[in-house]
Length: 159
Image 1 (tube, rainbow, N blue to C red):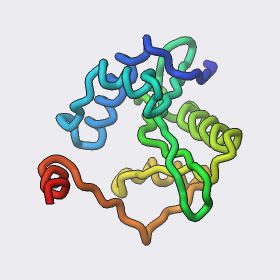
Image 2: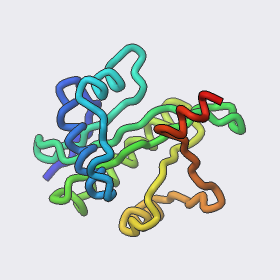
Image 3: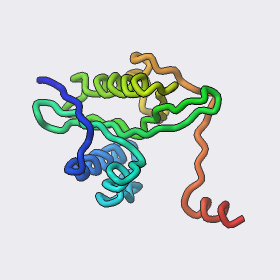
Image 4: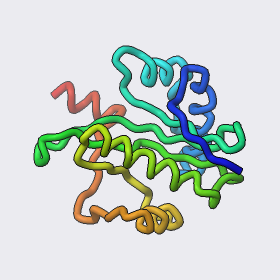
């Protein structure tokens, strides 16, 4: 069984959205996905694109993806790669798909001259945490994610 990685194409939009929904269900938020195929297509393939995606295939079948975008560090003065989502179908887990995706993205960051490659992981997802540690990731335990969305975003913007 060979694993191949390729840039996502517009025809992959439905597959990516399906993976996003599967990931949301795994992360105990099955009803949180409000993205649609047109929204995702515009984000990935519009001008300019908001994000990029890589499709992982095993024997020609899509079995996972990674969606990422550039962020920026004032401390380094350079961009970084932020991994928004990485998902591998249950049947393909343990076959090296996630590892291949992370290695590929590290190469993207390196080849583009970006300073960092970072992402978030749910603290209860210990298999993922352990996998990331094995790949060389370091926890940024002193940092916490802050978010304003929905009504709180509207309220803050209206102040």
